[in-house]
Image 1 (cartoon, rainbow, N blue to C red):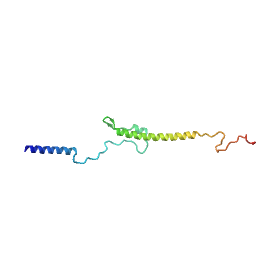
Image 2 (image 1 turned 60 degrees about the vertical axis):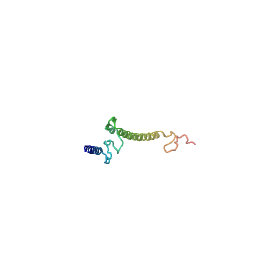
Image 3 (image 1 turned 45 degrees about the horizontal axis):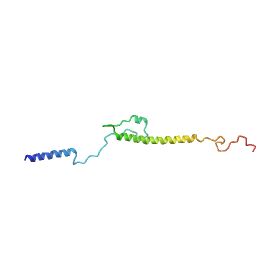
Image 4 (image 1 turned 180 degrees about the vertical axis):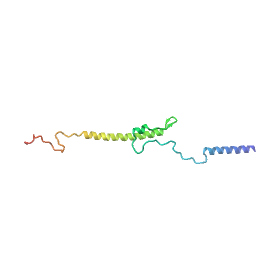
Length: 119
């Protein structure tokens, strides 16, 4: 009879461990374990945004996913600014590279100095 009570006690203990460990119930959906980064989403990043940025600290340093998110966003914005700078500097070079010829008037007609009046 003692053997039966030991068996029942073992079943109860094992069942309690399974229930406490979460076996038998569906696992909850994983939620966000960190607050989102405090970066503006409606405008480009400014130096003050990066100066005030605080990344979460993990076991061996900063959280890699947060650092990757910031670096990806910075790469896109720097590429956009580089393209804009190239476009603006190209337009400035074109504006200064086309001087008027000294013998042409702004309207495109040659100027007369009076030398060709007798012809």
